[in-house]
Length: 432
Ligand code: S3P
Image (cartoon, rainbow, N blue to C red; front, side, top):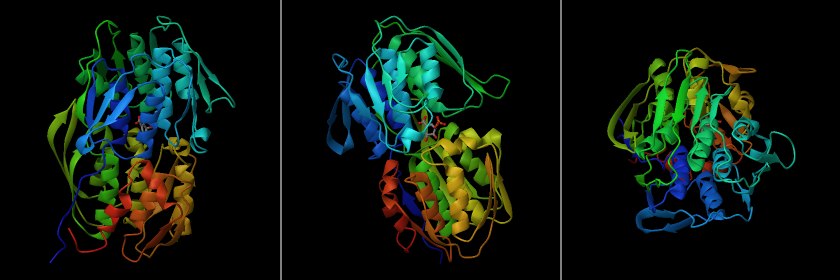
């Protein structure tokens, strides 16, 4: 008899949570947010907003009540964004839009990540942002700016980045100024969906060049932004690790209450193309975000093909797809993912080095990997450089028959998925 299906509810979506907290802090009325994850990154955004005067009250059953500051702090606090690129980049948009001062810092990993991609368009709007040390790196100092001094921005971004797009949208929202962003490939659209869900005038279209365009109309600053009453959908990127665990351990998995925004499910399409049986069912919408159930049945995947056209849609899932490719049949190829080199770690370099350290075969290129699938046991210790997605991907690989993987920094999973190890342990027994 086959083992019973394992059921999960993943933690609240990290990307959506950052945005919900920020919009709640900008809203006129109080907001009620449920399902926020215990993730370290989301805590960094909450701390950043609190340092500027937003008030948070933890209620029953995990509900958080958020109130905008009566007056945004003008003391220029130093805000530690920890490991969270989304906190740093989105908060730069907020600070620019509000014209209030602060200095943003981060941990060693975040301090190596590029900031020009957001600083440049925000300066083009009239934002007063300065590097305190090296160019393109944190710390970034936001200087105070007189209200009404931001300009309309129509920005064509060279990088496909939801953080860049969202920083500009939030600056436009906070200042009441029209902004338009054209990105070279569509990226996650949570900010746009939440803004539209709150009744703002947002237009989205897909120009013929394969990119995406979003325009937020100037908001009448006298018309208050309504508070949110919102339950954050489960994190589909966390569900990706559970799906990988299902495939490699031979257990069926059902993930409930998970966000199924098509801008986040390109990894499922890649799995489908690898011959994996996956099913999704949308059951409800919350402020424009589809939420439902995902089911995965185990089976050995075929080779992975992932090219530049798919990259932006599943950039956070490439580590997981890469370790599945290491157990897939045949040779897999991943191209057009140079962005992975500037994530929490150089993910391409770590994927290649770790796969080889475990006894796998992998070639690294400047913007991709070739991975030779094997069913030989892969065993050893992997280096994460504190990167949560590298840690979780290799931990999942350790579930494959004959494989044994030790992760050098198990605690780093708390960045997005604090309960990861408990959930992973459920794949090891017969329990449901
Ligand atoms: C995120 C956008 C992506 C993603 C990150 C979260 C977001 O980054 O990798 O984990 O919440 O906007 P980029 O905007 O740098 O692609």
